Image: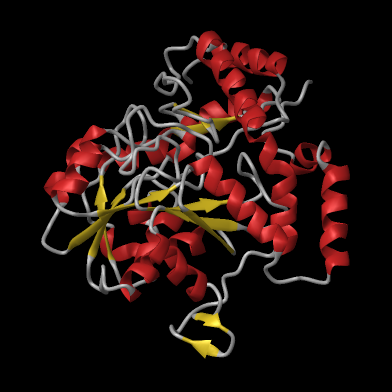
Length: 376
C-alpha cells in the first residue's frame, strides 16, 4: 500500500543540506557563537519581508511574544493585571505569553469559517483594563480586517500579531502603518521558526518584528539579560538570544520562502478542487496570498473514524489542536467559560499533508481517498 507521509523533516531539509553544512562551518570558523553577522543578516532580511522598521532575533516564537509584552510593561504601556484579547482557538503559546507577564487573557470566540479570531466580537469583550488585541494568523491564514483596525484605534489598543504560522502572507486591507504583510500589520509581532514551520530552523528560533524602534531596543536588552551595555543591566532581563547557528541555517532557507508557500498553495488548490465529500468541511476559500497554508485543516464530526480510515489507506494526518487553551489543565480557572465554537473546532479539526513531502500527484490521490470516506 502506498504511504502518504504527513511530515518528514529530514526529507524537507535534504534539499538545503549542502548550503546548510557550508553555513554551519562558516559559523564554526568565525569564532562568533553569540550574536554577530548571521543574526544581523536574518534580522535585516525579515525586516524587508515584513516591511517593518525593526526585527530582533530571539530564541523561539513563545519568547518573541513574551518579550513583546514584557517590553510594553517596562515602557509603561501595560501593567500586570491588564487584559489582552486572544482568540479562543489557538496554540497555547499565544496565551502563555500573556499570562507569563501577569497579564490577563480575555478569550474571544473564533469565526467557524476561518478558525481565526472573530473580529465582530472583539468590541464587546473590551473593558477599562484592555490594553491589546492578539490576532493569531492560524494555520497560515491572515487574521486582519477593517473591523480589527477600527476597534484598536477607537480604544487605543496595541495589536500584537502571533505570526508563528503565516510568514509571507498578505492581508487584503492595510495594516496600522500602511503595510499588508503579516508581521508588519500591527504594532509588533512574534515569529516562530520551529522546525515544522514553512521556514524552519534545525532547532528553536524566533523573532520580534515591530514598527516601534523603542520597543525593539527594549526587546534587545531584555533578550540579553536586560543589558545593552556590557555589565550594565537596565532591566531584570532574560537570556532569549537567537543562536547564530540557527540564524545561518535560516539565512539559507529564507530565500526559498515564496517557493515553499507556492508549493503549499498548489497542494491546497488541488484539495479544494478535488475533495468532494459532504462529510468533510474544507477551509474557506481565500483571496490572493491571504493564506500560506502552514496547515490544510478540514473538519469532520467523527474525527477518529475519519483518521482511522485515512490511516488504513496510508494517509498520515495531524490534529492542530485537540484541546482549546481554556480547557487545558494549566488554565483550569477558565474552563467554565462558554466557548462552544472553539471547542467544536478543537473536536473536529484534522490536518492533511501539505509539505514538501507531498507531491501534487499525491495530493490528488489523497483527495480521492477522502472522497471514499463514509460515515460509520
